[in-house]
Image (cartoon, rainbow, N blue to C red; front, side):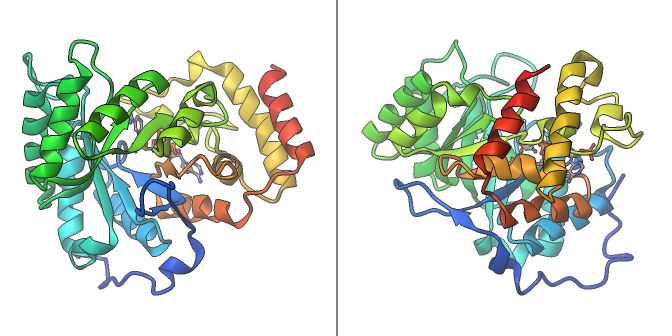
Length: 339
Ligand code: NDP
């Protein structure tokens, strides 16, 4: 499906009040402020998606103060198409707001065939960012990430690649993703010895995935690295989406999705219990799941996905109430562990 230019979409100007509700958070080590909610384009921006809706969703994000859009070379499907489609929408709606936006991309996972299309080598990262810039039509990324550690590439080489990208002006900041606390520590030291720093580690963190609490959050704070929590809604499980079955147009209902609900009946049960607690707080389950992450000042930004402007509107309202009573926190733990 292609974007049908401006047909049906009257001229758009972002909401003038867009900076009034969204809080912006930073680490002590950098002046860069992230919106409490950031928006990722892993899903819903590929060639097989409804790009009119994708465009309205991006507009809605910016209208609500979400200034950060997150991409990767292989988002789609097919690989690369999310960057291309983002580029088309960007040129129509966001070109004059480039300076108000943080746009990121990544390389690390599988992108093209042969030995140079994945990993952490200089060859892969430098070639990939060049392609990502072409696909999006951007002159630079605000943040460029190494998407995942590569056991076959010494971290020294990956650090040199990120430093070179920064020196070339192709990205303003460097990020890492899916790095454990030890690799994050080593990478930070390498980047600092090269006169720069890792700005942010993008990690999977949600009510249903608590592994960062073991070491990564504490180490990130020590190192002054921002924490970007991805899949905060567990791809939709922590919303009302699947409480009554699998809707046809949902992520779990799509063939090419990684979300397989039949493999996690316990998580659906947990979501049902959490929804009751959210209801008592006057929040949707999605809002409570985002608020629960934001209550921790160690989480710099919560990186949501959304397939509609309505979902954005729901999720941003999480910031209205991010405090939890002890009783609520205990009830949440009981809902998570009592299954
Ligand atoms: P989420 O956990 O936020 O899941 C998003 C999905 O949840 C949406 O597509 C939608 O599903 C559903 N949803 C969202 N809001 C609502 C709502 N209010 N009510 C009902 N359903 C809702 O995040 P993602 O898994 O999409 O990940 C977010 C971003 O994180 C990615 O786009 C990417 O940028 C980044 N990421 C990074 C990774 C890495 O390795 N660094 C890996 C994975 C993600 P539906 O489509 O069914 O409507």
